[in-house]
Amino acid sequence: MAETAWLRQARLVARTEFRRSVRKVRGSGLRMGGLLLAAGFFTLVAVGFSALLVSLDPDLTGFVVPDAVRGTVAGQWLFALVILTQRVVSNFPRPDAEAFVLTTVPVRAAVLGQVLAETYRALAYIGLPVLALAGALAHVADAPLLFVAVVFAFGLFVASATAVAAALGYGVKLLVARIPGVARNRTALGGVAVLLFFGGYALVQLQVIDYAVFGVLPMGWFVDLAVVGSPVAGSALLAVGAATFGLGGIALAVALAAPLAGELWLGDSVEGRVEREQARVGTASGDPLATAISPLAFPVGRPATRRVAQRTVLLARRAPIKLSFLLTPFVLGAVGLGNLVASGDLAAVLGPLAPALAVTLPWLTGAALALNPLGDEGRVLPVTLTALTDGRAYVHGLALPGLLYGVPLAVVVTPLATLAGDYTVLEVACLTLLAGVTAASSAALAPGIGVAFPRLNAVRVVRGRELVPPRFTAIALHGAAVFGLGGFAAAALLAPAATRTGLAVVLGGLLALPFDLAATRGLPTAGVAAALRDAGNAVAAIPELTVRWGGYLLPPLVGLVLALAALRFARRHYERFEVD
Image 1 (cartoon, helix red, strand yellow):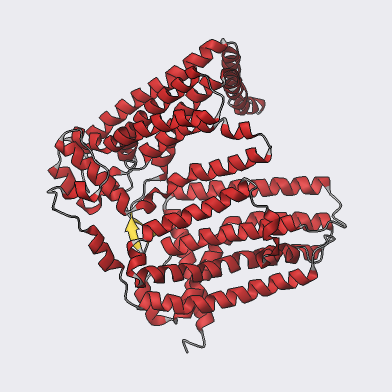
Image 2: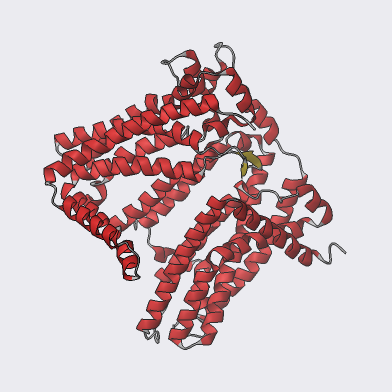
């Protein structure tokens, strides 16, 4: 009975998994707000573009699908495949309630259920924008069948990427579970894979590789399937190939994923043994913590401060997946570099490198270790609180890695980056000083923000284990402080006139606009809008020299004051913290 009803069971597993995901999102107000904000943004963009498309009413007759469009679709499919594979490896390597699922349904039903659940999640996130675009295209082309074709092609796009990602993800997890060498070096291998992926992505963004090259891949043919029944001239043969690839790929991927998942879920794993071996540290030196974090060392500070710093580095080294959020600025930077390269102005690409590094490196070294210190303690938090009652030593130990290594790194790399641009000696010196001060502020701010917004509850992050990454609130506040203050100082130093204009527009335009709109509806906000416009005009009248040096000096000083206040707050909060 179980074998003949496995498709129905797979749908039941998928529905259950999807409902659990919805409950998790609804249980976290911040996560739900972030998802709604992102989904709402994409929906508004899609609806706006659809409205523009309908208003323009372009003639699509005779438009031929170029290889560049097919290549773009294929590139997005590959990008989705990487992201979905990472989710399988990190978030969903095993089904929830694993013992119950594996004793009540066949493995292939559980696998298909996982694939369907992930497909539901993707459709729930971006399904509405696609429906809006499909409706607009069908209206403009006067072809109702086009709506069905776009929705069908998009569904195959998502489902095929999800199914192939499941097979790849289970295969990767099985390699880690069975081969000790892979398990021992999984972090390094994962890092190489990430570098290769982002390197390839950067090459495409920098237009070293043309998207048209990917037009020969079958996943790029979904665009030909999507234009069936419309005036757009696509290839009927490629449309059939896309449908065959989508449906056949899903069936083949699930058929391959089922035995891989069965071996993974029902077989033995070497991960536990390897992790126990890696957890052992040598004692020949008489200092196991120092040996564990070698070649890094902390020769300064009180003994308790050094111990906290060493343990902080060790925890990050053993769970590097918690630091994945650090990649975001570099992804955005790759996209920005691609856009600048497309403009053909090499100076525009290399010029902003030094000020960008002067702010990004301090953020990186400050955020890497101390944005969730209490959560990083895990189950031993009560022991730490009772064994180390000196809050000053604790917070100083949290800030010490960023101060000892982050400040020199920023001070050395920033002036080297200025060699790629046209900077005066004074600007090089000021950027270097800014990088050092910002790195020190970032290292001291992180513990204060981290203890103010701790994440104490574990989440499933990688290899089926529960880890405790920093809260999004802590990441956002720390990033806003470092990038806001440091970025403003760098902008005022290098482009004071543009900085003055931008600040005046923000104050007198963007901030005043909502109050002006409210005043038109009878609300008493006209005075606020007028005050903001006056403030914008006052900023626009500030001399350029004052903007340059005032904007350069004041934000770092504010950062230092906030950093000292954050350290003091972290010390007091730690000393008064009670475990429920």
